[in-house]
Length: 215
Image 1: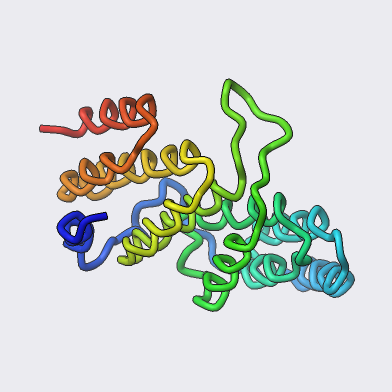
Image 2: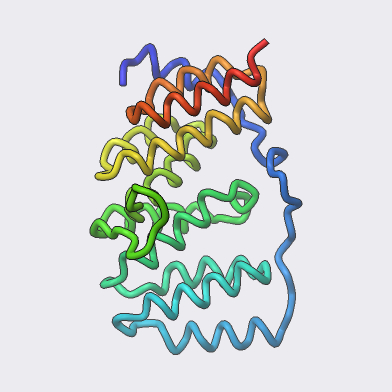
């Protein structure tokens, strides 16, 4: 990445992404019974090897009921031998921009370290002609978070170490469309970002979508 290219992405002092979500944000819920049960589940899982499917269950349940503190605690309860379900859970957090306001920076740092240490983990079931790789997808979505929080160089580093570039390219394409849809004045940055897509079919689709917003 050239310095000139990086400067283009640093032109935006602040991405107003908190107002971009199509779905309304729901504040942290208070449900003593649900909280008690989920916290008990986490206590049973902490320090237990091979706990990834159970941790993912707790994480997704907490997220469903807007118990964000418990959800992020569940992310940190995955055992060291977890890869696939951990990466799926991390990817889910960072692809939904309306959740970002809740994520403590300590959790962001922790999840990045865990993804970097994870092994490649391809999906066992998939549709179409492409088998997704969950570590690469998690790296792609973490890059989404860093890019829109004005750390594009960190995003590029994460994207560059992903072993399945198509997963990353799909996320970059989504980001380009998001910019065009919610921050049209920065369409030029979306176009520059689309140049980073290396999969020809994904770049072509992205440019086609961006043409809908061009004046």
